[in-house]
Image 1 (cartoon, one colour):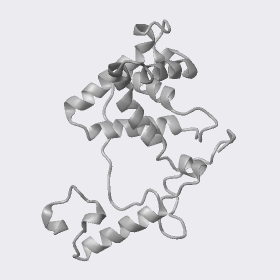
Image 2 (cartoon, helix red, strand yellow; image 1 turned 180 degrees about the horizontal axis):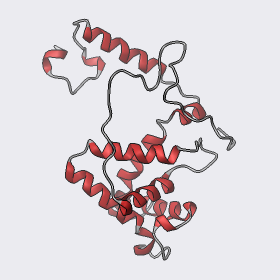
Image 3 (cartoon, rainbow, N blue to C red; image 1 turned 30 degrees about the vertical axis):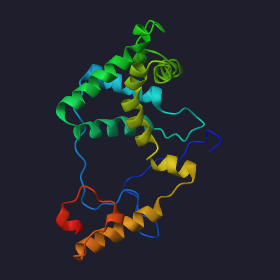
Image 4 (spheres, helix red, strand yellow; image 1 turned 180 degrees about the vertical axis):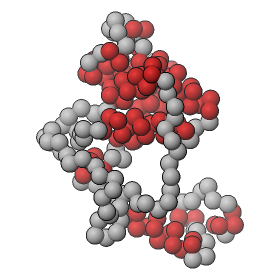
Length: 195
């Protein structure tokens, strides 16, 4: 996408396409509730998400920041308790990074998006590995969530229809009593399903 034209808002209640392959099917799967965060932690998360999301002309949506932040909180529920707490501490550390890196006299949550983004990019591109590693997990989670948004798929001209067809066919085979093959790449299933 080469211009900053806003994309239509995502409608999760919209029916699937004519081929029946919706990106978010209502198949009974329920995500966890978002990880509970207090006010300071929520501000730190918002600041880091805002700093890490690509600026225009990258695909945007009015509620993109909120969706990505919510998904990060949902993802934290799937981590072990101490790992999730460590991630929240890491968000605070990154939020305060303009101060301890001597780049500004404010936290990322009080800086303009561009300035906060420059500080986080500086950490991610540091010559010190331990410093680069501070930005790795938050950036991976934020950007993987961003690039999984329907507006971004539309902006990139990407439609994972083939993958969806394969996974639906696999589920139907397993429900019909067939076994999954090694090529189906279901590594977490018990041995009796894949034999």
